[in-house]
Image (cartoon, rainbow, N blue to C red):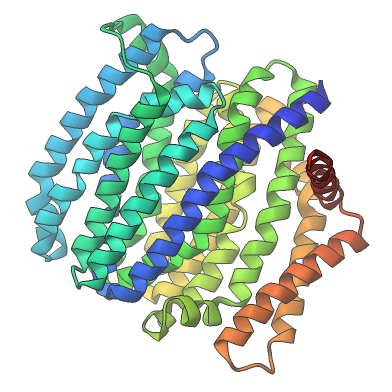
Length: 485
């Protein structure tokens, strides 16, 4: 059973990686190109609206996606009911955002934001049409279809955005790129998924799903508000340029951690839901997922923290250089994301969204206190506050997850400690190797090369089982390919 579970996980994570990572990498590359063409202040204006759009998106989903995946005996009635509910909520939320646009612009003292907000809000209506399609494909572990839709959409919209930015459309290039991406992704999901809602709506189904999803909605709202609160506060207290620096450094720092964990977590979530009553198997797989996640993410985050300055100079040019210290601090803060995500997810797997909500309330109260204390001391201290918050986040969420899987602090930290030491050793090697090099391009190239070689070498030297597993998988895949030729 364990071998088949590993094989199934490897396959689903593979397709999830194709869909999410290919899209995220292309989107990241496009964002880097746009950042070179668009001023930090224009990026900052878009970032100022992020909190309002993100909160609205949380209401559009309302936790029903996870509820549909978590439910065992889901029916077409459930899917159709959620679809129509999402449409109604999308229209309602967009209406509220549309009417609030003048006041948002007044809050920031940026008149242009009123029109931008009304246009950005259209993404809510578009995304509301595809929530159920994504949930249905996730239930079927069909990440291949999602890969096709997302990839085509991001390439076409990305090319459009870059062309518009090149011809000095500035903030409108960023806005239209996002809108076209959402629109095309929704159209292709409908086209490829071949699912249409039935003319069915059940209040009983809605109530059943909402009992689980409502707690996720509240938890998601708390997390969304907290994550985006920094852009709101910085935009109010400082300048649009400062918002641009913070938002871009947060984007780069969160990209590897959040993207990789999105790949892993959404691929293993349906699998964990299938074995949620087999406690021994669920617990052993949890530790396995935790180690493999940290094995990939820890070295990437430490590596980016070390080469932050040359990375910015090469990718974003010197106009973004003031964000280098912010990027280094945020990379260390967000490297703990695998532990937090997997512990959060196991609560949903076990149907304990009440624990999920309780933990979010406690964490966000602590996070807001940290924000209020650090905001007076500038952006770098605020980023250090985010690091402190993430440490508290781990402590709190493990306390609650231990109640359902009985894997506490010692077991979890022990399982990833060797990976942490390995990653720190790799970061130290990169740092000292680059001290005598001044050219940014050479620093970046050698930093990546030295980090990659040293991490693999140390993994081999200390016989890391994740390295051995991946090496064996690669070797077997290569052998199968050669035999088929």
